[in-house]
Length: 397
Image (cartoon, rainbow, N blue to C red):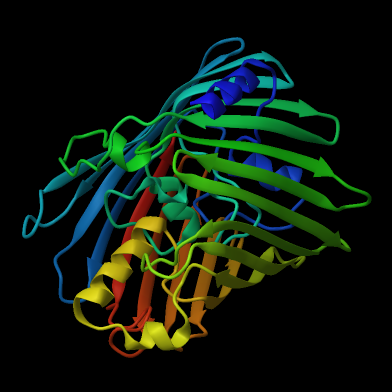
């Protein structure tokens, strides 16, 4: 509690954190295009998606996001998602209150937000070690698109403040404990998934010499070790960006065993944007909380199931190293048509995950199709994942 009171005093000062991912990417001068569906200035954004796994019935979801200015300096944000799925083994509908918060901006450089917020941190596309809120929970299956997983998770009830200055920003996030366990009831706000313990985060961004940009993070909470982190990006020429991020803390491994020791999470990446509006990204991901290769290969039965569940709850890969490749081509073949492709290759068990899609983007409506498939031996990271088709539409108003 003394640490929490100290952070509350900091929050009363104009010491905010970087805002949403789009602002963070701009601040760090990344030469890329968003992996998720395009952002819009429209106050109302909706999405309808249908998904079909090979051998399973269709299911889908409808979501809506409202971002409205109430009056000068005041803004309200509400985001909700309703999933429809077959009744076998679960309810027919599951609702997720993703965000609901009020924002006050007393000046162009200051902002204070309170409510359920989904903060997004880091500079990489496929995995973000600086995203300490990634375990807030997904109440239903999301797309393999990493940005979709970040956008569709539950937000965390918190107080967030930020202060922008010439060349960077500083800030603080404070989240109280509201419930000790997750609530799977279809219409529950599920405070236990997002706010099961007190947590806090201090963060700053700094513009270095030339095109170098850095983020610095320190996070902690009740019963948690301190977690420092850093991210950096550097623009090489007009089209190429190198970037990386890393964090570390004293933890047990994902299996809950082993000594509590420093375990690191890291990403190294390279991005390139061609004059044809083709954007390419290649990343190497490292998860120091995962089991060693021999221990992962030896998992069987209930121990395997418990380990995969722990990795899923922590929103981490069950193995230590992966390659991530992503391509997006704006105006592919004709204006408004967007083609995407993604590959995840697990270096530990040689399993792979492929995804490709095509989207037509208009001013007020987007229509698209996506297909994804996992390949590998049964029990590997991506093995046993059948072909999945997704049809989706987005509207902006």
